[in-house]
Image (cartoon, rainbow, N blue to C red; front, side, top):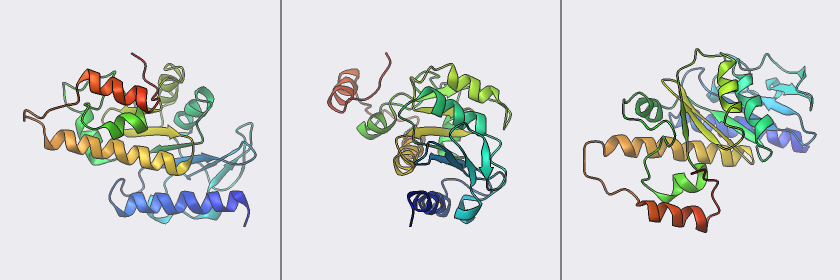
Length: 216
């Protein structure tokens, strides 16, 4: 089995796991990963995470020209923006996960630091999450908004739409976006209570201890 074949199967396996546990639904969400030769494998447009076919994934070469597979997701500009601005990006995942979308719709959401400092794990896996404004699905302006961050964020939240996370590989990206959704769920569960958040000093300790990207 070649490295690319393994990667194709891993993408579909992880996507199905996300779908089966309700982290995205219907034909929502998209996923991509770097191939060993510097190209990309991308989920096709209009497909369900629960039923991706390894052989039908959209295949791009290192110059981002499609060379095989079905028509890619309409969110390609979002994916390529992360790859072009973050040298460490080996995979990108975008979901329509319920709790993070709900949190993005609340009027007091912090655009610069979307997730409240509730646990160390979201900080470790995501750094600060930027809340971007609403864009129409497929709008190339989403990619331009990510490019405007100049590679300083590994995760963004598209308001009224869903989270997008880049990481070193597809497993890390899936783990990180799950952490984002679970933190949003926790924030909604505790909303209106006097929950004790991590202090700025505790956040700084986590950032320093685990060498987290954290633009102040």
